[in-house]
Amino acid sequence: MIPFMKAGLSKWVGVWLLATMFGFGSLEASNAAESKTTEISSAPAYELAVFPWRKVGVGSDIDDAVWKGLREAVQETGLFSLKYSYYPTKSGRETKMISRDLLNESIEGDLWIRKNAMEWYRPEVSLVSSLAHQLKVDAVLMYSLDHTRHWFTMQVFLVDVRHDRVFDAKVMDSPSRAELLRAPIRGITLKVFREYQESRSQAGGE
Image (cartoon, rainbow, N blue to C red):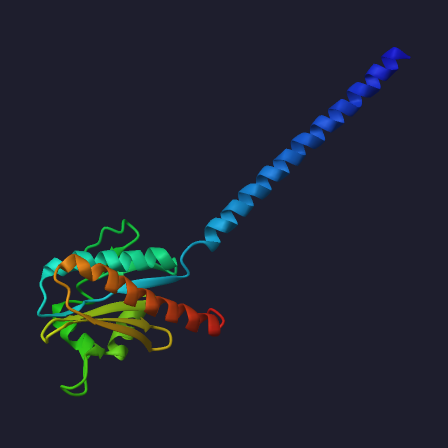
């Protein structure tokens, strides 16, 4: 009787151990799949290119402040990955320089237009979109920094490449130091990012 009980007990212990091993294996696989799904879903939804800025009456000392404000907006929203830039960046390997065969100084001037002297310069959307299509990005970010008047005018334009639509924001200020540009640049960049995100949500994320 006792040997029979021992044999039966050993059999059930073996079955339990197998079930436990397979169960844990399934749980680990499930957790891995869930982790991978979370990683994919948290990736930026859209790809962004930074095109040449329009700078009038300002020096290169403001470039660092602008880049800091831009990067903070990109990181805060998590909406875009910076795929291309006309300028060198510190964003890592994921950001590539735009080839000068595609976009160079001879084309820079054509990227900005205005109807008359009373209007502010704006991106030439058809040209910007044409170049962006070749880069296969979803949007293009451009800044206009003008200090020719009594104040410093900072404008940002986000071109929706698919729909040839432009989101823009502007702030006028008189900063005493270049580093003080960081906060207003971040603010207006966040504004156009969120407007772009809202427009895509309304369109069903297309």
